[in-house]
Length: 324
Image (cartoon, rainbow, N blue to C red; front, side, top):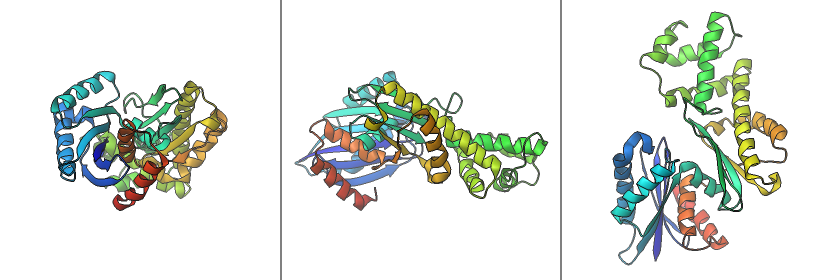
């Protein structure tokens, strides 16, 4: 029996999934953040090796590990992918390897190799797409200093700015100001300066403020609603850019969304779809049907055989055991 491992090394956590090539999912293990840029090559490989060792315990002596497919945050550049492939090949853990950005395994989880795109919005934001000939186009993914428009970080930063403007009287009143005071445990607006800058909030900490914005928007705060509308517009622009560059009619393009920001539900989806109806009429978004780690495992299987309905059905059924 042949086995594969799919790995989703994200900015928040890392998951590794063992599967038979018939689609039977066998074991799932998890670890901490897996961003290659933050861990460094040695740290990243150490974490991957530990996860693979845990999964290999479920492979019988007569089985063979034919492929490891990795999608990782911070792995968008060809140079980084080449370095990682070289190091993995030297390890001889598996017969073959695949490495790509984490957005690409998420995309495969939705499209299963067909033309389509995915928008991912969490701490950061990115849109990734592929056409029928395998041509890829992506938009975003520049990080919080250069981009990440429409992300949790973007929303959190706009909330902090709106609170400061309200405190000055140069912006409209908003319930975000008292909510932020409460969130940081301070009494006066000026005390937010120390809470935000000493030490500076990390991008992840700023992104967590997006949930607060969603709550206030749900309660009817106009400023919070406007912030979400701005984020939706930015995501729609990225989606439209990728869809336009793929050159496919909306009806032939599967489009999916994923990421923690979409836990806002209709608060974000409604303005996003309204923007898309103007920029890319006929393009519908659906939630990602399978998690990225499952996309990585299916992508690994696809390198040795066609992804038949039987394989997909088996993966879907056995995924329930792992709450995927």
